[in-house]
Length: 603
Ligand code: FES
Ligand code: MG
Image (cartoon, rainbow, N blue to C red; front, side, top):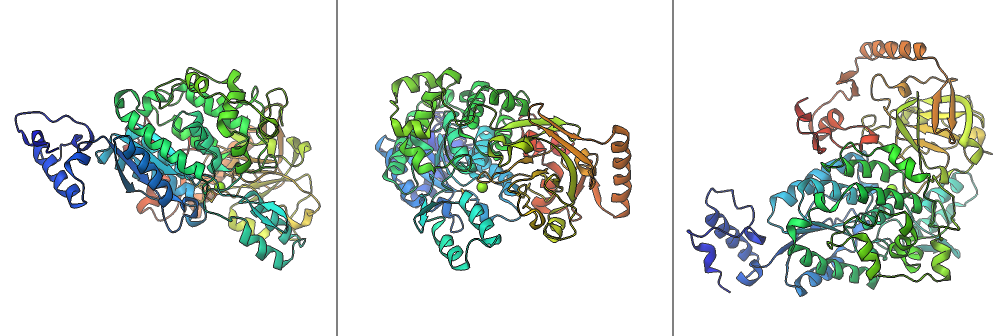
């Protein structure tokens, strides 16, 4: 194939594959000529360059073992693309791993979303396969891809295998926390904690429990952007490679129908409701609430139409069905063996919006009809039928009240002392994480089993980046207690548990936040049944304390901008972040990146 037509100056160029977006030099034929020069430098011939291009977002990094299988995945994915007549070209973006992203990976999620959006827009790709996995990567990629609005499929690296220590199955990272807590409490010896450290993450891949990574993978299947078996196949399995190959084939099929498969066309209110249904049924990570709100608000049609109440309304009629840590006992590997998302979606069928579209162009109903699933005893053990749930409903609830006028989240299913779900007690307040570290184990801490631990300054603006510090450790002084009611404006890891109220909004980093003025000894009431979070302090006193706080911030020389308490150094990404991150219930996205945020940068 010589493609001489590409140089015929009198004929318009068909804007597909390499031939799209040729505006840079004013002369599209010259732009195409130059593109070919440089891709020929990479060894591509005319035949390859005439194909639909499937761009692959490659997020491998030496600092990201959750993505440590990308080389093998990439080979299988490219095979799938090229066997079906497409041209596969991968390109890098930022890669985020939970342990190697300071101050938090959440702080960098929006940067990754911007990187992903702009690279998808910039390059001549017809369809995109985004390879993600570790917690913040999949939401960042979906946020960016919806805004870029080129057809996208998600391919995750897949969960790691569980390990074993002295016969007991263990896995990152629910067991990281429980074993560390046992070591801190003196019930695990130092030699054992060394051995446990070797086995908690015995292979590459994402955390093997229903943490944020697994949750987001399951929600992406529910959104119709990933094959049914794409969420749970282990990172180191042949099944994972076959998922990659299948995704490649699907991407080429999508390239023949670009105009009807853009994410803003595929995704709808119904798809997002389906994702919320799955979130409740899997007892998924609380982080997914923030991510899903950010994703919803990137879409022009759903922006501002769904909110935290939507999660709660759905929770009231959707039971928890999947028995995985941290809410249950098993690992993602078991979920895969039990039938994974295909089995779960068949189980949830009566509750789902079956008319939602998927990336195949078919509705969810058609996809499920063509892929039946017959339950077997093990699948029913892991993925319970609707008639025999693990938890009847409302695994994840939304709370409101004068302490959280814009909402807060509680994973009721992860509570370790259910009496705390209807509780009133005096606050023990930590102003920030430094204060917490200094005093949590102090003998003078005025804490009892009835206390309500309050941690401020870990919201989106607060730290910044909403660290997963919401699981405030149980103070040594009340060592006998296995749970206390704990409140914060931050997040917790999807792999953690306890009676933990999170994402309180407005966060204490907003000057007039009621949460920002809570003091030691104030009575706080949580009622799960009423979905209430109340500060038993009168409105006038709250207003007076806000005024005093404003004065104090001035005296302390703190910088307040647009009603936010921000850091004193405003340069770079951190400055942009503190000025423009929105609140948890909006998704902690940048206000200027949401679908209606056109003017926010200058507001
Ligand atoms: Fe990457 Fe848990 S650290 S998924
Ligand atoms: Mg995590």
